[in-house]
Amino acid sequence: MLRVIIELFPKGDVSEGRVIAEGYIINNLEGTKEEGNYNYMLKLGGSGVQSILCTGKISKFKRKKDNVWKLLTTVLKKAKL
Image 1 (spheres, rainbow, N blue to C red):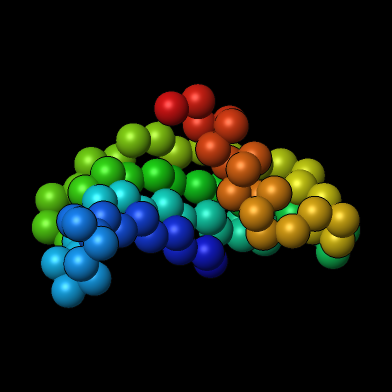
Image 2 (cartoon, rainbow, N blue to C red):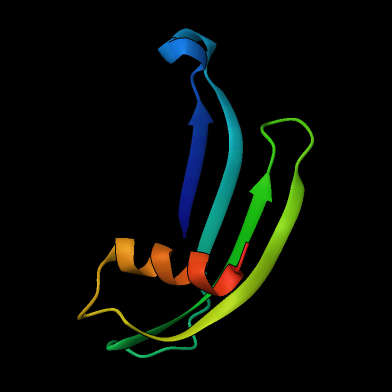
């Protein structure tokens, strides 16, 4: 599983940072060594109340050819936020 965390640091102050969004990309084990299939979930909010923005599935991702940034980009494009 991959977890993407987006944090906000007001005025660049790391000590005041807070999580404003999270995303999860989970290998659903339905793929092959060459092509991965993944479920994803994108949420708004931090450690308290969170709201799910969207969920979905990525199929036949070329895991040997493309890297993790391409996977994240693919999820964001498919989510159409």
